Length: 89
Image (cartoon, rainbow, N blue to C red; front, side, top):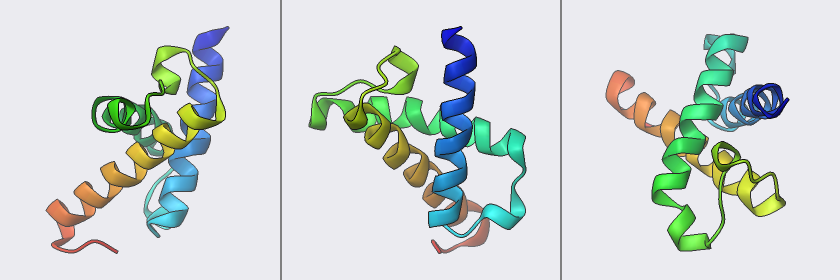
């Protein structure tokens, strides 16, 4: 059951990050889920030590962990935009 919740919350966080970075029209549902989950991994690696919170990948569904996962997804989209488009939107 946690796996399904992980997929759903990853998709929502990926979608919200794509809205913030204005890449929503270029991505579908599948890429939103991938961005949310990989962004949570990136957030767990970069931001978890700073904030002292887990991420959705660590089965921690608190408000702080959702924020760390969301920021990781935004950072991931910024890196992808920088690499493939040469600028961050």
